[in-house]
Image (cartoon, rainbow over all chains, first blue to last red):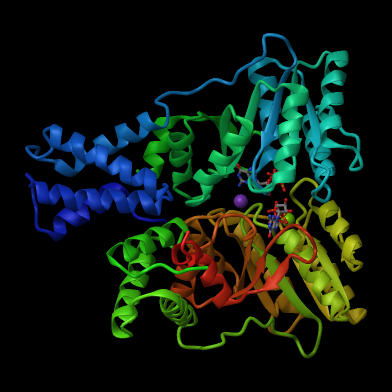
Length: 298
Length: 286
Ligand SMILES: Nc1nc2c(ncn2[C@@H]2O[C@H](COP(=O)(O)OP(=O)(O)OP(=O)(O)O)[C@@H](O)[C@H]2O)c(=O)[nH]1
Ligand SMILES: Nc1nc2c(ncn2[C@@H]2O[C@H](COP(=O)(O)OP(=O)(O)OP(=O)(O)O)[C@@H](O)[C@H]2O)c(=O)[nH]1
Ligand SMILES: [K+]
Ligand SMILES: [Mg+2]
Ligand SMILES: [Mg+2]
């Protein structure tokens, strides 16, 4: 049902031009066209695709692809390696504050998965790092957002700090951190309302929260199904807020997830975790090599 | 605003504009070929003409010859009109129901909501807040069974003569077989109570979604009889261009667009306005 993978694409293209074994420079060009198509179908940003294909082409020319008896496999290998490299090569760890509590802000567009992921992150940090999280309900806008976080808190048995919907999110965040210190909670995860990067009022609110609580991590949460606009949004959040990392959600779908590559290569901030389902344990660190294979449909 | 010349670079830029609007590669090439021919044929050189030709032609392609494609929502003459809202997680189903209920209420209709998302944390409460905000009734249940809630709501809507029943469902990714089956079950319940089944099944798509939206449309169409699309979050910078490919492949029209989080932020889809939005940056001189 999903789109065709790169290997099949390249194989198909070579069969079409009747090539077996060694290829010419013109064939390589045809291959690069397929690489470009595969990446665009995976929603990799078209500017990123352009740069990337240029690089892959140069590397292919400089290596022995033209002499190789399995040129398509060679190209796939190069593409795969370059993608992995572009996505950071290895896993980037979550940062803790040397002076607890470590404060985390969850930010992103509407419906990206921030609230769910706040719960997942808390649960992960308790299990792996033995942390004592406090969840903070700083979304006072979305109907029943507080209730949603409280339900998640109850499921996981973590406290949720809330001042209702009348309070100011900046005050909520500030007071939550004070409360965490009193209660000996060493990880404070602030759930903020979804917002558009072009919404000046709400982006200013985030800046004010940041100034008030000095977070160690500002995690931009993004839906893996996002298309070409992912880069603009991520860039804008980063410019206005200085994000420290990215969380890619909804990877349990059949999307190729090219947004990941685009964001990583354009804003240079690491993808730290991925969401793999609706359940609170469906969460894991991000692995660039797996993501590369996924984008290529392998 | 001034308009740019149609020169060599123009069509390259057009292709880039369409691709960055998530129109998709194949569809972009197809459109650009057609537009090239059209511009040549009509001997368009400059200015306002280009804008008109491009928009006209793209609207024509979108409408596939059925000019003035209907965005109207069907009504069930024997009442109630049952509308099922489906889609993947977080696209805006529940919010759209709130907005649409508000619109119907303003038209003097008696509206009932069914809280068919019994899964996601806070989903029922979210719909309850919307019901209260717009002043309509809502059927909920803590049973955890969407089919049961829908059954209760159908019964109530018939007994108490509601004009509309809007059914919220949990977000589900199209590749989750069990969750898609659950949707089939909800459909069966509706078909048992309402001859012909749901009057409309609206698939909600998020404009920020890329090419996966095409797979969403195909898979949901396979499970439920999707009769229309709603494109949400068009108030951002994403354009949702993938709907052009969906429309090409499967004949499902867009009925509404979502333009914000407030109750008035739902508009009837206007192809001309939408397509102008897709290519605005290209044809208005910056
Ligand atoms: N399948 C799947 N669904 C997810 C994942 N993460 C979140 N969701 C779902 O996506 C939807 C939106 O998640 P939320 O956590 O409410 O998103 P949000 O960013 O807090 O939304 P707003 O507060 O409205 O901006 C819900 O239905 C979640 O269950 C994931 O990794 N996989
Ligand atoms: N900017 C903008 N935000 C929207 C629009 N429609 C919905 N939203 C927001 O998107 C987020 C998700 O909306 P929901 O209505 O909860 O989406 P859903 O499809 O019901 O989500 P699940 O039930 O979790 O699958 C909320 O924060 C909404 O306020 C829109 O047209 N524009
Ligand atoms: K989304
Ligand atoms: Mg939230
Ligand atoms: Mg919902």
